[in-house]
Image (cartoon, rainbow, N blue to C red):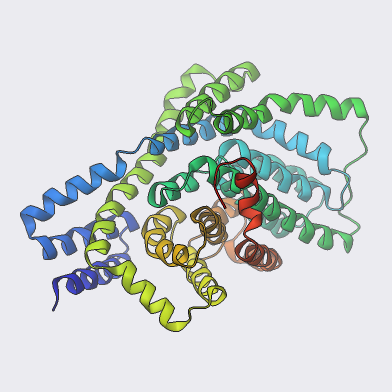
Length: 436
């Protein structure tokens, strides 16, 4: 057998076998890639090349933003910022039908916009607003479904760690990806709000929040302004060219730390545990990036992207059919894989195909992140689904049925994002971050 074909066979069969044995995906990818590399290059050359690929993969300045954004999210999660964002969201959407559920959605979007983590949003906002919803008589599975369905909007609204990872493998501008996520991320939240509105109209017991005075509302909003200013400081500074996304992530840590100390919600003695939490999360991401670099070398050696392109174009050369096919593949992958390794593995395969059809890498990045974000709330692996169910103290099977209307709405929005490039490209083009 041709060495390249043998390497490809070993890579994918090895990954499948290791996953069936219960190995973590990072171990499955790493070991399979090493064995395939040894087969193609020999043991000595394979070891040297693997070491070089790991170093090349993680030796990236933009990747330094990930540990700092992760740390900023940990600080915000424990620093009392979630409660202030919930109160601000209640002022903004509290007069809508199903007001507490609408507040949950708005708060998840706001928290995601300052932390960049859907899992953190589901945990922080869900644990904050869940007990309030229970007192107001909200159906527990429905309340959990609202929290779970809306939390991934923070993975699309910047800052987004997943977009930083996509930028690494695609060479797309981080700033352009950040800005491109605003409209699709907002559409995700609005889609969830529409489902809640339709649900609440038929259930008069889901009363709206009591009317508050202008003064009370202004006071609540002002209390949340310092947290919301983090978005302006970090994203505004990046777009204005005052600092890079990596430097912006450092500023996010300092700002959130100072804000939490000002709120007196954390103490110095808590910092070591926060650093440890951030280090654990970061180490997982960096290890995945390193082993995925070995896999990327093997795929390039075996000409897998070219073969994938030929296979897809053999089915159809129609851009609509090709995009739908890729989207279906990504949705299926998202049900079984964490978004980070999915981006690292499949972006290098699909990106040459879509760019050959004239699709901008930034547009495809938003499409890919949106697809994989849906996977985070989908069984059997969805991390946000599990976190949201755990926070609500409810069984997974009880909440999945309540998620079905949200899945329908989100798939409709996904089709709009895929086939209306302006939703992703208008803002970065207007700001001069990309050329159409």
